[in-house]
Image 1 (tube, protein in one colour):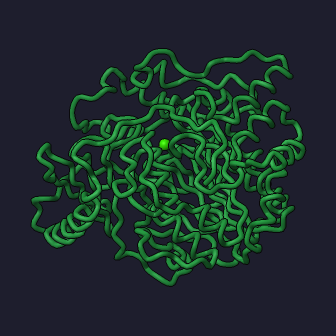
Image 2 (spheres, rainbow, N blue to C red):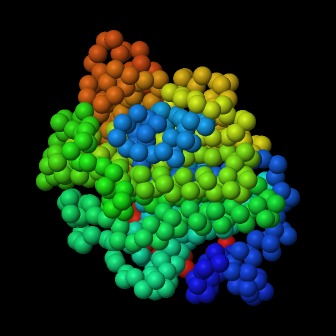
Image 3 (cartoon, rainbow, N blue to C red):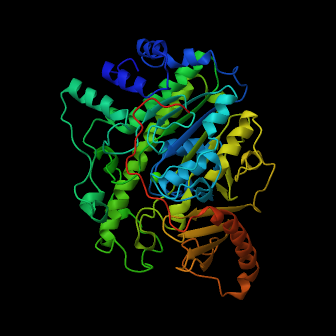
Length: 515
Ligand SMILES: [Ca+2]
């Protein structure tokens, strides 16, 4: 933080708690904003005795974009190291494969329909408790760096120390990274380059989807996120408090703009397309892209995955350097995946595995045995109860998720768990997925609100090519999952209004906030 320009300090201080308190604001400014914490610490509960918790989140990283998952091409040495030191869940899911709703579910352990977060940039219903609020009350120091996607932008839902960076481009007021970047560019005499592709339909074209990052690596938002997260962790350590810190990276979200050095690691000719690439479900917006175009997109995506992996490695090395690794539970997840050619599609908002599946790696030295791989279905809805369990905080009975620590400790096989994924962006709804064991039942909404079902067995058919709804051999799992899905949807659909609320594009809180 020592290099932070003064204008940046002022901007950051304005975004902090509602202090009538000129003294507080002055104190922040004098201490370069980190001074917020000693003042706040006077009113905080005594330090907790739980472990430090580091939540590492990437944006749109498919579950299989991970060397440890056996991809064979993508290089993620840092995440592989993390997986080897703890447990890797092979069947983890987002609650909703869309940025904002997924993150709200992750931070509350409630599903998006109940939360009212039907799409990005929709405010949730009030009255929910957020993970940092639980952990503040338990004596933790809480901080978040990077993407939060809470609406309106600027709301922190309990995080005491926040450094925002929500987008690649710069909508005003929601990035602490851009003012820092501009100052660094000025200092080094480097030109500013607008990274966003031109035109509304950029995501449908190869030239819009792909490119390279023009800046030095230490000026990327990924490097900034690592550096600021380590600042917050070091600060918490100085306070003598256990921390809960989120390091939330924008990569590998599109447009896919890696540094050239990572792009050179991958030869598009060696990229394999998914088994379902030749089984499109109908015309789609990517029909103008050829198979070779898809390979180039995947090349750029993998490069970005490796780029963010390098920064995650720096973050883990930073924990070592600060001497906190042995006392820190680390969870790595992404908010949802990216289809990367499955059914000839890109991006998210579909019920297929590449999109709803997420990586889920957890390390807790001395508490979670290394080298574990679990096939138990788990979900981002489990993050809150898992962290509360680790911190020794009672888990409220109305949370929809469950702690995964019993699975990680080998106390629960977990195979009987049913995990749900739901998306309601369009009336009457989009889809609901129920997952149990190797079976996956998907309900896509018909216009009348009834289900069009599809059943697949991921053990024998990982590419999801064969619908088993009419297969007599699948009668038992079909009946069981249909019952589970209908019960789930009966509960959640109560919260879905006939007309969904409108988005509030880029609604941002710029004034001091209190929460
Ligand atoms: Ca996302």
